[in-house]
Length: 240
Image (cartoon, rainbow, N blue to C red; front, side, top):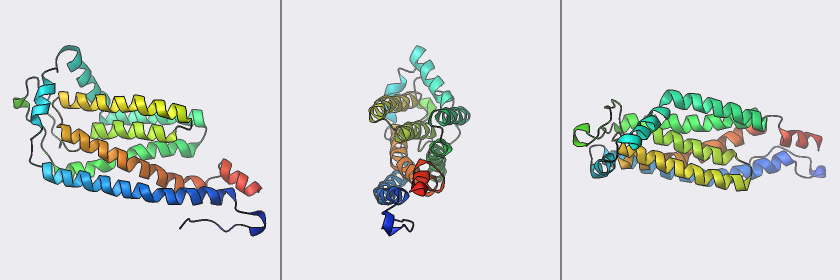
């Protein structure tokens, strides 16, 4: 049932009421998708905790981890690391604030990425899947000490792309972001595997996590936080 504020029957439903009535039912399918995604990732982590069945894919892709491709993979791994990711998100949030002139939209962008990204660390710590064994790779990268499943790098870049698509108003530009961002997400995933720092199933779990969770976080932000401000819809409602 939609959650609405009392309205004046004589003047018809207020626009703020209509906004909330539309937002609440849209939340239900996102909750279902998020639950399915979390369950799949958690169950996959339990099943893969001690498995390295997909190591042959790492070895095959790692053979190309030389020269320009190897340098690109190393650069991507560093660029999408925790500190650069935080700085990059802050810069993009500031740009979005300048373009949209709405603090709620910009804050929602940052919050959606942060919640989606940081929450995956719970699964990583709980599953504690070891990284691919560098001694079994032809061109190993420096050994990583943290767990492998899911990939925080892949979670971040996927959450960034999904959230950017969600905050884009133009349908045409949204499609462009989805295509370009989708290619970037796949490219980063392939490079992470070619680096030998993640199994393919680590990356797949990261995609599922972000694709299922980020839309829910964004919807909750819009539903709970944005209607409380004096944005355009709220001001129009008061004028009515």
